[in-house]
Image (cartoon, rainbow, N blue to C red):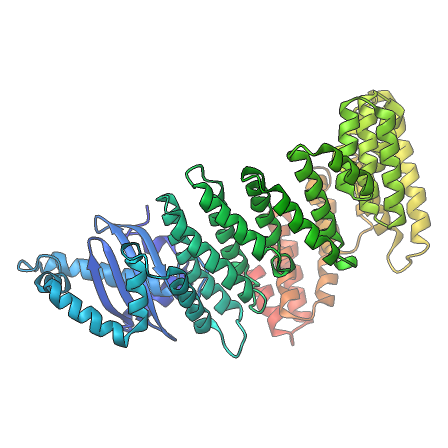
Length: 576
């Protein structure tokens, strides 16, 4: 439980100290409370608004700060928690018997309705933000209020607040997203109450404005994108709700039809593809088939060149899926025949013919796919198709072919233990002993050939990388050590520690000591020194009997490099 009594024990020490300093310097102002809801202002580089919700004046249920910090809890909230705790302690020690709740609430009770109206009217004239907030809060009471414009104005103001010289940096983008997310949450509240009209007004405004922001804002943190995806989820909830009337769904459909004609939704992330799914679902539900197909057909000529190839394939496959979903199978088949170069289209056909056990037809489709991929120089796609051939070999119980592909995939660019074990499982123990030796011999031959072209690295290092996965998997510990003992790099040596330590602990230490010294000789900055010290500590922990040898090396290095104070500092941490 996160409470006023224990929050200090659960927070980052640095952030806690900063918050405490703000509190002690009197940066917290305007602290007010209403039925467990606390509000305050904290004066930092700017003045920030903080809200905290307590349960029984103890448990911290929720908190919020409008600063741009995107971590779990900021120093401003922490400062307010200290302030609240002090305030509650004061109340306990010196109870105010005459006060019901607080001075502000007492004042509200004394003001008449007419006085409220006069004040609100006068204050709204001088404070547009107050007027806008009031209109949005009570919009349901007056159908003439254009909430879309009010929400748009609010977001534009937030954007302006977080921009500087036409640009929005990383922290500002995170700050904007934080405030916009509050508006999105309000949209979800409306949707949960089945007020889909108001929820969609918010979703539409937020989506359009934020899609513009993401074109120039620094979204390194992903906060802007997350806000947009949150809006898409809101639209999805509205569009697919069983409680939404058809007119509402049609309104969403037309909105998406218009918005998704803008390439920005596809240029800056997967937003367009997510919205397409909603658009397609609505087209089927609303029987607006031609409208959806016309939208796709309008896009297809725009998708030219390599840049649009992925998008073009996606739109074509979507059209095929849509035609099949609405029962226009003849048209879908015609499109399939025209677009068999698209992997997804061909894969769907392969799945169909495999399901009907027409394996020869499936093999032809796959082999044609391999040729297309080879012509395009797409080795990943070639491998994908070969795995489909393995799939068929398994279905046909073709053991030689199954072994061929298992072996190929086990050593395809890098070792794959899944395929290696699958290959091993196709042999009995005696057979496998011969096979694994054959594999090792082949790897040695191949590595020797490759090393002739890459003489800048020792042959033993190449051989270690190539054979160590097999030696580890087969528990050929002695063979593994024979390769490892020729390695000079400490980081590469320590990779194999856990596989050798039970049989070669003392031998490993004798390899580590000179390797650590070589690492020290090459180190030339604080980061390198820290890595050196880190390796020393790991070795002392893993090989307790060698602790003194490592410490002696650290002392030796201090004497060897007395003019490297940063190295000496790191080594002292090892010694002490």
